[in-house]
Amino acid sequence: MMLELKRDDLFVTKSYINGQWLDGDEHFNVVNPSTGDVIAQVADLGKDGAEKAVAAAKAAFPAWAAKPAKERSAILRKWADLILKHKDDLGKIMTLEQGKPLAEAIGEVAYGAAFVEWFAEEGKRAYGDIIPRPADGTRILAMKQPVGVCAMITPWNFPSAMITRKMPPALAVGCTVVSKPAEATPLSALALAVLAEEAGFPKGVINIVPTDHSSDVGKVFCESKDVKKLSFTGSTKVGKILMKQCAGTVKKLSLELGGNAPFIVFDDADLDKAVDGLIAGKFRNCGQVCIAPNRVFVDAKIYDDFAGKLTAKVKALKAGDGFDSSSDLGPLINDDGFEKVKAHLEDAVSNGAKVLIGGEAHSKGGTFYQPTVLTDMTPEMKIYSEETFGPIAALFKFTDVDEVIKMANDTNYGLASYFYANDLARVWKVSEALEYGMVGVNTGRISNEVAPFGGVKESGFGREGSKYGIDDYLEIKAVHLGGMDE
Image 1: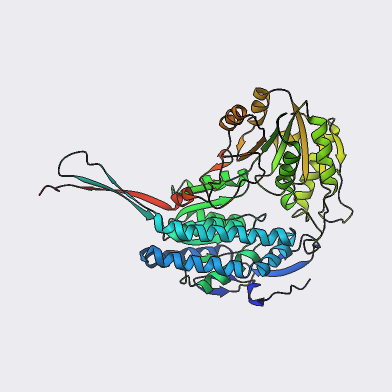
Image 2: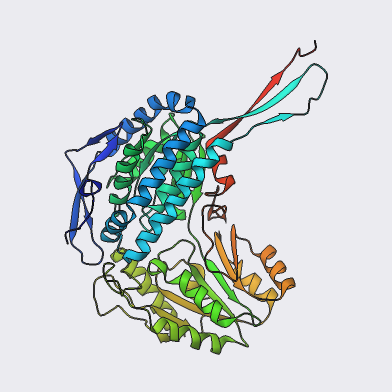
């Protein structure tokens, strides 16, 4: 389909390196997952482009780092304003390449702009310390300095928000960046670069290298001595590969990897609110969210009641093209994602799970899948141990608090977790016992710019958002002063 944009120049298919829009000999197709149509052919500069981007970022770093924090802040703030001004166009581009409903896409753009605004302010507050002196005639200072060139590899499920969560803290403190967006969704990142250039970022400070040769470009980022920090959001499998590749240069890392989020409903919970919270978390972006609830644990005393209420709400959800205003869910991103959801469903049913609603490919065809509710789940099923990344709400039964805490923690992952309860003692106990980087208590929404986002265990390390999100882009230098006696 042809996009009707207020600014056609936001639809870009070239790489952005050192302030220039570069075409190349190779290109790769970007496909609309709702229709299967090729919507763009994007320049692929591959390994050579990645190396040029790193060199440009290295050259731009000294001047950008030396710029007063207030001046960097003003540019970031202008970028945030431009993103919000053009959120409708950015949302349309995202829906076209990613498939999520347009209202959801526009909401993601605004969510991402909030991080740009937040770090525009936080960059002015990267304070150091004066440490109490250990002896006469001495002083000790702890100063914070930007790490240098930062490489960023972002996923397809949030093509705007992942860029705007990672770049701003680095830019705010004086780092320069090179970024590889997911090959399925590069257009959102390139559109953001158009606005970044308009906001006034000097050439080389921001570089975007879309490619279909992801492993080659990722290897350049990991092995380059000029790249001082890598931030990656994606699968645990790929995260481990990147971690090994970074070992040779011992660079700083932030990894936001896979999840297997538990969603616990206790018998004293408000069931209607719990159902709404589960739907908000589970079916957003067709379940293709790293923090989406994957295992739903419901107290046996309220299990049937909860399942009934959930099924009634899920029945009202409509899957469809993202540009149809009545659509609640878009398609799965590709055939691989579809096949994984299908395999998880078939495994559960073959091992005794019951389908209350859904459970099949959608009549719309392609990679559309029906929103699904499963009951009678057991730990032997794949959904218990593997992230589904699709629109299946799988309900497990439990009988006491200690049992469900053990089940919730029975995973190598530790990104997000949720539970609904009203007893204060229980809220404290469960919040402290869950082995996750984030816990949502009586809410299915846990991500915003003011709170730290990140996981533990094999879900990675490092934090995005909040005052803590800026730390990974700073080095702490201790300065010892002697001879300070008069």
